[in-house]
Length: 448
Image (cartoon, rainbow, N blue to C red; front, side, top):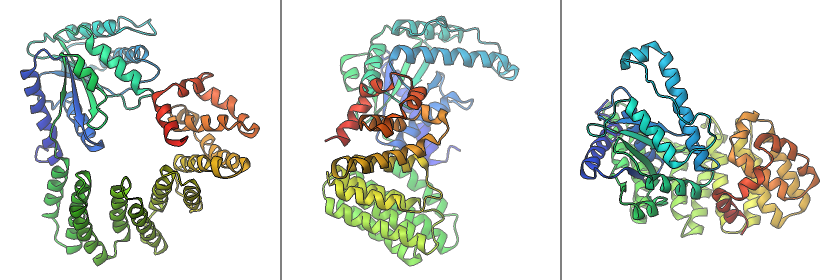
């Protein structure tokens, strides 16, 4: 397992953590930084490894991924309630108790409260550390707060900053995650000497290449070798895009396409052109359109020739092209592309994806077409959403934004769905979404 390149990065993070806490013993809040989703998953993998029985650090890690909703006080309350339930279940499992050596006699001291302060949150965790016999010398309790969903990033940063500023005992450290571009906690670190960024060099492309190289060595047929070689070139192409080298990008594009054309791998070649479209999207719209058109043509050909098992790429690439026009404020062109996507075979299409398409189309139509055309589009999308299980809709932010678009369009045909929306999200859902950081970004992207 330790020979796996990704696992090597996880173990590397263990070494980084050990060195950081040794060099900075007074830091109570560390923030690990990652550049993308793969690096985030690697960092989360490090925490999960330290939670497991195979852990190689003396510290006791807890991983919390619960959504950050409403405000920090209710977020902290939910975390403590989750811990309380976990240890209750732990104590009822005779096997776990036998492995640990005894039951864990900790209960949430604020079980009856609907909101807890930062100090109360820390005090409750301090009590847990004492029960776990963590003394702060040989080990600490590392509370990892990685909320998978965030309703308001401004409130999240504010609450985490106040938490880091709270008097945190030597038995506890907090671990947060930040994106290298977003730098959400830049101010937190600047204003708090007991907080510090950890910026590991994970070299994920190198890890992926190592894994592929090892896999390639096990293959015997030329086609299998070419499949892996293509993946290696694709990693290099993506890497070239991240450091903005058009020369390298085009070199690896040719290497990829030499292989795909040899085997007539239409879908794989389409991916190459999709990556090129991503590269050009910010600074050369004409080239971006040219490359996404090539991806669409290849994906369509793969479907028509029966080489593709699904038509998801047909949707995906058309959505990408429509978005290029949309964010360039060419709304009529965007609407035409979105309509072409909605005209595809929907047999295996995801309802949420289709609803998103209707949402983008309606956003174009409300500026370029009739009131009725926009209303009809919103109704068609809502029919898809409302057919989904209510429990899924309750937790889905996109569905809530869709509901917002419907009600603000001010059409009787749409307003009649408001009672159902209130049942899903509560009577104040529209006010809440309008005041969220996510909403500000959303409206900034679609209402200009």
